[in-house]
Amino acid sequence: MFLFFLLSLVLHVLCQEFGSLPPRPTTGVRLFLGEEDITIANFSMITAGLFHEGDRDRPDGIATNYPIGPDGQNDGLWCQSSLNQNMIGTWYLPDGTTVPVGSGSPLFANNTATGQIGLLRNGGLASVQGLYRCVIPNEEGINQTLYVAAYGNGDFLKDAELPKIDGSGPSFQLFSSVDADPPVFSLSFTVTNRSPTIVTCSVDNGNQFNVSDNDLIRTVIPVNNDEQVQVSVIFRMRVSGLYKCSVTTDRITTTPLVSTNMAMRNVTVTGSPSNLTNSRNSLLSVTLGWSPSAVIRATPQYHVFVNNSNGIIMNNNTTNTELSLSLHPDDEYNIRLVATGEDLPSEIITVTVPQVVSIDVQGPVMMPLDHSSSFSLTCTLTLAPQVNNTMVEMYWTSLNLVPFNSTTDGDIVLNSLEPTMISVNDSVVYTLTLNFSSLQASQVGEYVCGASLNDGINIINLTSNYSISVQGE
Image 1 (cartoon, rainbow, N blue to C red):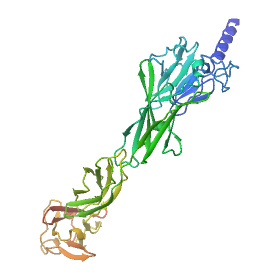
Image 2 (cartoon, helix red, strand yellow):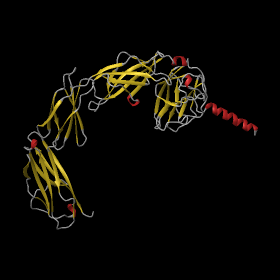
Image 3 (cartoon, helix red, strand yellow):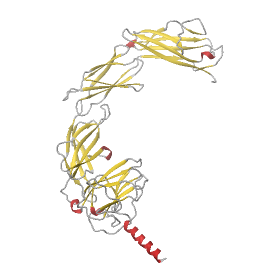
Image 4 (cartoon, helix red, strand yellow):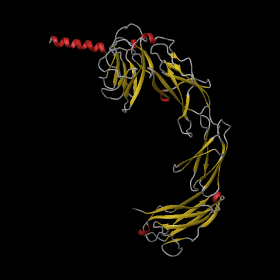
């Protein structure tokens, strides 16, 4: 009994020395600093005095003090995920080798807890200081990489060691298609000496803003036993001007380190074309015209995007200010025009090419099946003024494509052999009616009205189907 009590006492003391595990996030992944009981940002900077293998200190906001006493929570640096999985994650040293799990000096990893792996320290960092990374899957099982810069106390407190931005200027890349509104582009530059926790930008010396993690791509590149971080800032705007970005290293519990130089680049926007017009030259031919963009450094390239009600998209490119397109007359088209030549594409201007031909059938939806109910199906073809000089032929057929060609013979006859034509508000309307003396079972089904249009240049055929159903079925 005494031995059991002694064993329980030893286990209790050991548990107190290690401390309890910190809480995990409900979503995503994060870095959690146990001693200060805080989540730290990706690419933050910490000192050796802020993380340990056990519970040594409580939160006090001081990086390199003497411990003031435990608080019950482990003081390691924890890489955490909301994924409920054991033995998760890997820590890597600045040289790319893995941190040993279970034991080691001056660092080792602990992955015995669900959804997290701790970086624990039991010695000095002078020989292994630099940029550490943790790879851990999120709740969807997709690996995420988090970085932290860990230094010995002396190097951590060097206020003159600032992050440095490569002075050659940032590179520009357009990420989105030219018709995106707004366009999406990036400015990329290299940071050395300290890690870029926060990126702050402005345009034409306007209000500064911190770039969100969603708009930051930070890529670590080993170079001659050192590490550079390529920073790509994603912008979602169409604004010309001088873009400036600086970086800040967030030293946990200590004054941040701010770069003294900036990444700067002028971003230009292509002048927008104007006065986009359209004219239909024939049944199938439409000509677009527009006024050119303002003078730019290169010959502007014009991109014409066409979509209709079926979602079909066409993309035509030209350096001219006129373009002929083959567009069917029985559909409406939305045209978007954008110019490129400078860094960013121009504003998008639009025009609608209207539908100029329509064919439609009207009649009863359902009919009783008897021999006394006569009814009609009327086919209407409408030509807008742009194409109202077109030669027209109309017909009715059953689904077997046998045409109806009589006004007197049979139970289903035409009202006339030629369509009736009238003018309505400068449009020309043609009608052709199919008359039923009664409805028999063999007559239930689909009927097709068709039209052939000939403008002397093109011939097109249009159809409209109509289904006759029987009540009660």
